[in-house]
Length: 319
Image (cartoon, rainbow, N blue to C red; front, top):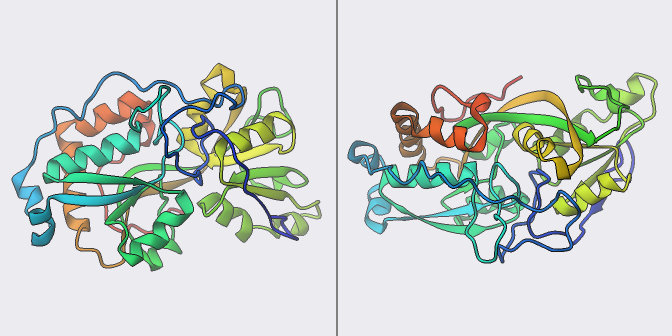
């Protein structure tokens, strides 16, 4: 996407799992790390503690599920697997996905007394597939926005949002991005179908208004390709999740610097509009908050600063 100008989409094959936290990652089917991924891009092992293990069914919460779901005992979840700490494949062949989103979804399922049938999917395909009934709900660090609320119901479980990162040693943007006009004349890498792409598109005229050269946006579906582009100087900055970029910058091999929080957003489990599952999911998340499991999961993944006090259904977009 050239803003303003011609949109550029890069669909590049890359590591099946990588550290770089782009929201629009193509899911990994094999669960193995790509030996050809760039330095710092390979996913780290998962922490060994398991706060979900002790979670038990809560009958009063499970009773909020529709009768047919209680009878079937299963829910289909479309899951975007891509980057720590949200959801990723740890190092090692055949290991199941790990991450904050995985733990929270599994804990909610245990409270509700159901099994999850997890289906890996690319980020940008999950929300459209909810309406067709392919999945009962979706996970993938989906931010709650006014536009998405027109067609999707959300049950919130964390507060994350938008941030920026550059290659270590790059001082063009200083230590923090607070205005998009700071990006004028630069090339930004981000993910397809994300709030980042939407924000950059909506604000594409800010540079012209400031009398500056427009920024250029390149949209990737593979995180390894984006990290390679940053390392090779083909993009200047990455726009992605606060928690993902902060986690990445803490890994020395990644060679990136986090430029702070730009805009916070509530993040939630996603459902088709009018889903009867949302009251049960909200009650389950609140149960986990109340009994301490929620805090233990966030502590495990280092995301405690993004904790919410209570889950909400369809809150307005944070401004």
